[in-house]
Image 1 (cartoon, one colour):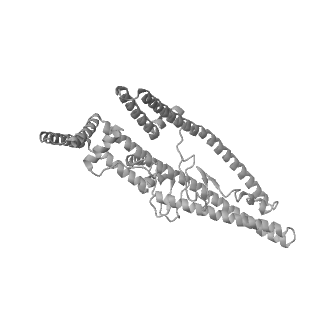
Image 2 (cartoon, one colour):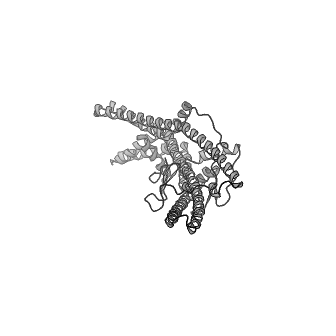
Image 3 (tube, one colour):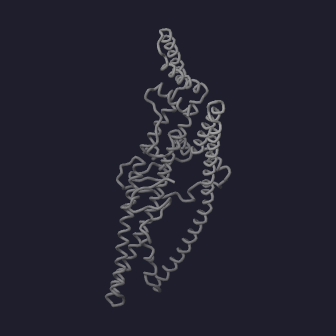
Amino acid sequence: MRRSIAMLLAVLTLTGTMALPSFAAETEETVQETAEGTETAQGEETAPAPDPAGTVSWENLDSRIRKGSLNSLILGENISGIEGIDYDQMYEDLRRQLNDIANAQWYITIMGGDSSSLDQAYDALRDTFEDLKDGEVQADNADVVWQLEDTTNQIVSGGETLYITLVGLEQQAADGQRGLETIDRNLKELRLRQELGQVSQQTVRELEQTRAETVSQLTTLNSTIRDMKIQLQNLIGEDPTGEITLGALPTREEMTWEEPDYEADLEAAKAASWTLRNAQITLDDAKETWDDAQSDYRASREQAEHTWNAAQLTYQSTVQSFETSFKNLYDSLANYEQVLESAQSTLAWQQTLLETAQTRYSLGLIPYSDVSPPRTMWPPPSPRWTVPGGICSPPGTTTAGRWSMA
C-alpha cells in the first residue's frame, strides 16, 4: 500500500494531470506493445490480407479489436503514458523539490513559524524518492502496465467469444431455414393429400402451426444475431448497423496444433496470469504489514499474526483455484477431440446414406421426401439456443442481446 501511494504521488507531482486509470465498467486485458509483438510475429510468417468492406475474418479479429475498440485504445494510451515516464528526470525533479522544501522549512523555523505542513510534504516526497532510487516505483508501474495489458487481452478474448457464438448462431439460422423449406414442401404435399381425402384437416393444421412456430423462432434468432453483430461492430470500430459478414472459423487442418505439455503449459499460464501476480502483490503487502507489526510494540501481535496467516491462505486458495481451472480446461481438450472425431464419423456415415438415397431416387425406387432432410430437425425443442460459451436468449428476455466472458 505504501508503495502504491508513493508511486501515485510521484506521478501527480511531476505531471499535475497524469492519473492511473480506474476500472469500473469492464474487466479486460492488454496493449500496444503486445499487439505490436503479435503483429511482428505474424508478419514474419504471412500477414493476413485486409478484410473487404462489410466483413470481418477470424485472422484479423484480434488486430481489429485492438485498433478499433475505444476501451482498448484508452488502455493503450494509459500504457503509453506510464511507459513514457522518464525516471531519471523524475529523480532529479524530486531531489530538487526536496531541497526546496528543506530550504523553506529552515526559513520558516528561523522565523518562528509552523512548518508542520511542509514536514508532511517532505516526508511523503522523501518516501517516494527512496522508492524511486530502490526501483520500487518502476516495479509498481510495471505491474500497472501488466494489469492494463491483461485488461486489453480480456477485451480481445470477449470479442473472440462473441465471434464464435455468432458463427454458431448463423449456422443454426441456416439449419432453421432449411428446416422451414422442408416443412413447406411437406405442407404442400399434405394439402394435396387432403384434397384426395388421404389425410385429415387436423393433420394439415398441425403442420401449419409447426411452420408458424418455426418462423417465429427464426425471426427471434435473426434478431439476436443482429444485436450481437452490433456489439461486434462496436468492438472493431465499425458503424453499428447489425449488418456484417463473418468469415469461417479456421479448420483443424489450417491451425498449427502442438502436442500439449501439461506441466510446461501450466507454468507458462501461471507466469502470464495477472490474477496470480495480483495475489502475490497482496501477499507481499500483507508480509510487509506483518513485519511492521512485529517491530511495533503497540501493535497486537496475535491479531497481526492471524491477519498474516489469513493472507497466506488466501494466496494459496487463489493458486489452487487457478490450477484447478487450468486442469479442467486441459482435461476438456481430450473430450472435445473425441467429440470432434465422433462428429466426423457421423458426417461420413450420413454422407454415405445420402449418396445411397440419391442413387435409389434417381432409379425411381424411393420418393423425393425420402431424400430431403426430415422436418423434425427444426424447430429446436426450446426457444433458447445452445451456443459455444453458453446459452443465448431471444430478444425480449432480460438477457436479450447480451453476452458474457468466461
